[in-house]
Image 1 (tube, rainbow, N blue to C red):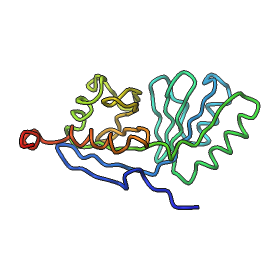
Image 2 (image 1 turned 135 degrees about the vertical axis):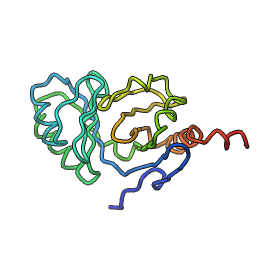
Image 3 (image 1 turned 90 degrees about the horizontal axis):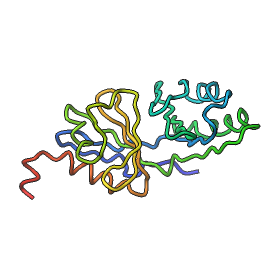
Image 4 (image 1 turned 120 degrees about the vertical axis):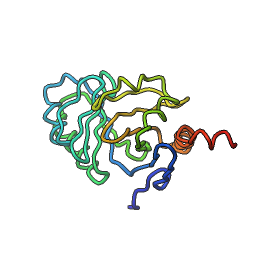
Length: 185
């Protein structure tokens, strides 16, 4: 088994906000009826968090559980914990209709930090960033591609498909360019 690598090798850009591609990060897409009684205990066992409410992400250390839709949650954890997470889901939900997929290698993850980090996303997404509160997750688009992001700590974490990681990084870099540099091009 080879060592996992992030989509862009940890690329960093410093503008009026810092853009950093992070990873690899372990992710499981879990689709099932979110009202299942076994689900809160399962989420806690895998991530240490509670089951997220609509448009919320619950974070504890290196792990998180994010609401993605009415029947979908994204479980985030250290990359090396994914196989055990999938196994736990299979055991605890064996009698419940569900789908659990390791999507770790299909996603790219970015951190946008700095005092003007919100301005980067304002340029790219139709979300009212001023109303986005810590712990809220938004599934939306960044320019023309699907993405999800949330505010935490000193910035935002953004998840996109790995296949468009270079495009997303380019968008983020361009959006974080100081105005003076844009005028020189």
